[in-house]
Image (cartoon, rainbow, N blue to C red):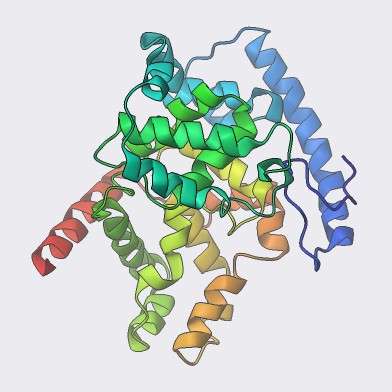
Amino acid sequence: PRIGSRVDPYGFERPDDFDYASYEAFFSRYLVVLTRRAIKWSKLLKGKNSIQKSLKVKRYIRKGIPNEHRALIWMIVSGAQTNMEQNPGYYHRLLEGEKNDKLVEAIKTDMNRTFPDNIKFRRTADPCLQHTLYNVLVAYGHHNKAVGYCQGMNFIAGYLILITKNEEESFWLLDALIGRILPDYYSPAMMGLKTDQEVLGELVKLKVPAVAELMERHGVMWTLVVSRWFICLFIDILPVETVLRIWDCLFYEGSKIIFRVALTLIKQHQAFILEATNFPDICDKFKQITKGTFVTECHTFMQKIFTEPGTLSMTTIDKLRETCREKLLSQG
C-alpha cells in the first residue's frame, strides 16, 4: 500500500489531520533501516524457524523485528511457542467447551468498540477479524478464569491478530502477556496495574523530579494520565509502528520496557509539561507528548528509550513494586 493512502498497512484509517509529507520523509529513511535489518535477520535465522536467546538476539530485537518474522520471534521469545506445542488441541477444546454466558456477553458488547477505525475489524470486512477476536477472547476468558475478560484485552488481542494472522498463536501470546509478562494488570482488583502506576510515579521522582513535584502540587494522580499506557500497552496512544517496536522488546525483556517508554516520553518533554499551570492543563500536556515526530520516528525513539531514562534494573523495579504494593494494600 502507498504511504499516501488513507489506510495504513495494518488496516487503520489515517486521521483527517494526518501529516503525509512528514510521514513520507520519515518512512523513506526508515525503509533503508528496515531493508538493512531484514538482511541481518535472514542471516540470523538461516531459513530455520528457531532462535536461541542471546545478547546478539536481544540487540537485534531492540533494533526491530522485520514484519515477516515478527509473529515467529514473539512466539519463541515469549515462551508462547513452547506452551502451544506442549498443549496441542487445548485452544480448540476451550472453544468447544461449556461457556460462561456473562463472559460471552461482555465480550460481545465490546466487539464493535474494538478498532472502529480499522477496516479489517468492520462487520462488512471479508474475512472479518471480529470473529477471530471473539474466539481468542472467549477462549482466554475460560482458560484464565481469575481474569475472565476486562476492557483493554480486546485491543491487545486485536493487535496480536493483525500481526500473527493466526487465532491460536494470538491466544498463546495473549496468555504470555497476561499470564507472565504483565504482573496482574487485568484481574478484577487490577493490583498489578495500580502498583505499576505508583512505581512509575516513584521513578519520575528519581529521574524527573520537577515533573513529580508539579503533579503533586496540582494533585494529579498518575493513574489519570498514564493508566491507558499500561492497560493498552500504548495502543491508540502511540503510532502503530512504534507500538510494535515497543512490543518487540516487551516480549523479550518484559514489563520493564513500559517504564522505559513512559520515562522517555516524560523526560524528553519535561520543559513542555512544566509549562502547565493547572490540573486540566497537565492532563492535556500528557495527551500531547504522545503525538508528533518524536514518537513517529520509531527507530530513533527506540534508541532513546534505552539511553534517556538511564540505568533501570529489574532489581530496582522489583523493590519499588514491593513497597508500592504494600502501601496500596495498607490503604485498602
